[in-house]
Image 1 (cartoon, rainbow, N blue to C red):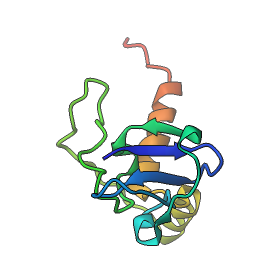
Image 2: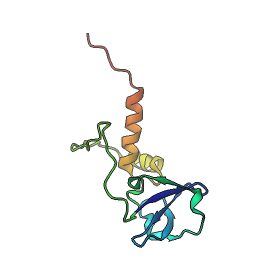
Image 3: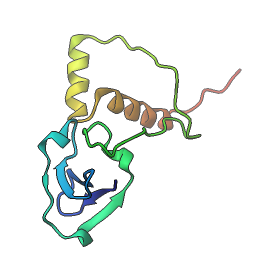
Image 4: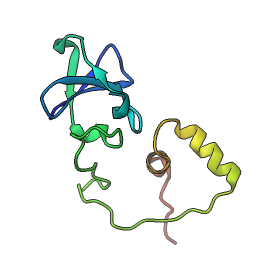
Length: 120
């Protein structure tokens, strides 16, 4: 099944269902449950990777995005203790994104800016 990004509706996905029909749904968690028939032209659609719709409930979003630049998935996790206020602020900043995805992306940006300390 193919996934498309509609240029005129950037916060939605257009994708095929199991029968090949094109459907439009919000690009947010469980957005597939709010799908409607896509009535626009196919020329306005940009084909993208089906993994981008992961978490929306679309049945074509199989697999996952690689976590490491080498393409390998991480098998280790870390835990961070946070106050209720910190977590609320993070969830607010994450918006419609999963908190874990927002945290990972935010930490990767910060790590890219960090300067390595020189060893004595």
